[in-house]
Image (tube, rainbow, N blue to C red; front, top):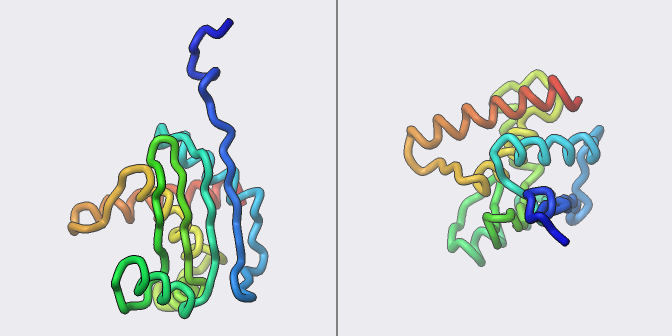
Length: 155
């Protein structure tokens, strides 16, 4: 007999990481990042069902951008949401774009920009947008909050 408590309906999150076409990320702790992503979802009162992060190069992500979004521009991330409640999504990240942006922004901590982009995808799935300047400002604030949390609690 079930009492229909929230714990009865909890989902065990499945988060996976794929490296496409020989891209790699040195010193990338999948267990730490996985725990961090689960913590972000909890903080945002969201449940993750399945979340796939695919790390690729610019060429691969540009092809997706052209095919599915009709954009002929380089980007660092594309999120394909299938469900927001619970979260189900494929997220593609260009490691080349992330490295270039990290150099451009002068991040001092390893993986800072990568973690920012990883959190950016999940934040979109949690309901944050970045179309207007106010939304973009809030998105950057949340990215900073969660990247700082990673280095404080998970690194």
